[in-house]
Amino acid sequence: MRTNTFLTLAVVVLTALTSCNDKQAPAAAPPPGIPVVEVTNMDLEGYNAFPVNIEGKINNSVRAKISGYIKEVYVDEGQRVSAGQALFRLETNVQSQDANAARSAINAARANVSAAQAGVNAAQVEVDRLAPLVERNVISNVQLETAKANLARAKGQLEQAKAAEQQSKASLSAIQANMDFAIVRSPVSGVVGTINFREGSLVGPSDQTPITTVSETSEVYAYFSMSEAEYLNFLEDTEGKTVKDKLSKLPDVELILANGKPYTEKGKIKTVTGQIDPKTGTIQFRATFKNSDGVLTNGNSGFIHIPQHFENVLVVPENATYDLQGVVYVYKVVNDTVKSTPVEVTHRLNNIAILKSGLQKGDIVAAKGLGQLRNGAPIQPVKTAFDSIVKVKPIM
Image (tube, rainbow, N blue to C red; front, side, top):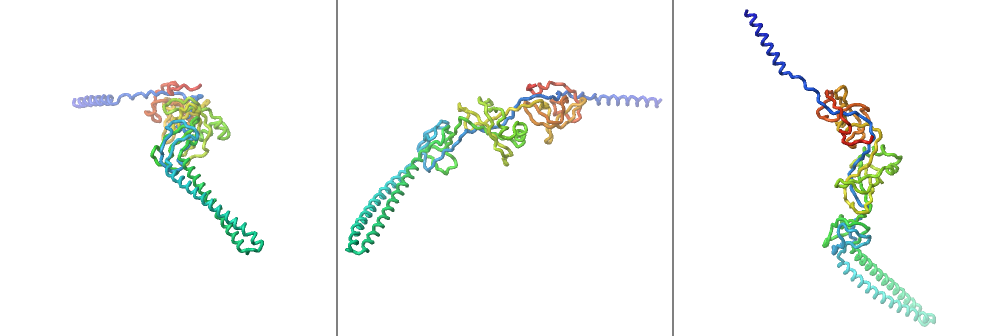
């Protein structure tokens, strides 16, 4: 009897434990629903964007040719000026004093020339008087030779006096030229930039900072840089044998201004420096834009858009890719399971990644929710239209 009671209690306990275990082990959650898209081929029209700095076609620094204090400023910033137009006037008090001294020196030199000329005339008269007397043996030849020596000496003094006069005139000319330099004129026609010095400022030819800058902006240059890899892609993707030939075949480019709006005129990329800057690892390009309305000024910034056309390229949504230690991957879907697959991306544009290798047309990849996936994880594929993922309708 006691044995049967023990067996009954054991059965009850075992049943209770089994029931508890069943409550602690609920059914496994279903795999997450993940949007997936099919890898496909497309024709795409996009652009590469690069930040640019705008400069006028001609930018001339305006500096004083002589040292002096600015007395007058004739122009204002942003004003259009002509070549040779007066911009500033410097103080000329010192130059005026020097000019007066030079004029006095010229007058003194002229007086010396007159005196020397009189000495020559007197010496010549003496020689002319003695010469016949020597011929008639009235006087000795020594007196005549002495008179001739005096004449030669007088002529030498005259030449020295004339040279001193010319030197005085040259000094005055130099001083007057400096006085002319007191008017600082525009070297080219263009627009006046920032005026760095105004009335009362001491300026001179050795100043590192110019008084101002005059820029010719009827045509402007937009400078931008490519990395070495981007430059090599440019050489590879652009038609033409030489760099010059490739540049000539590039389509017109668009300038996006700092406010995000496109500039009305299209531009043309015309030059490239031809060498990599060792400090930055970049190479510089220059695009030219017309600026007849004067909308663009020296120092503007923005972005340049270089059109690109791709025919029948293999693509996936850019959101379908992720980077791990410098390698780009996608989650390829095989039998409702994701497999981490490395791919080679050549370009990214319009939220689309263009592939060179790693996938084939018709493969299925996870398009969203990559952060919750792991290699080998099961999913419930949710077929999704490619266009709804990239939000841009490609050219088919």
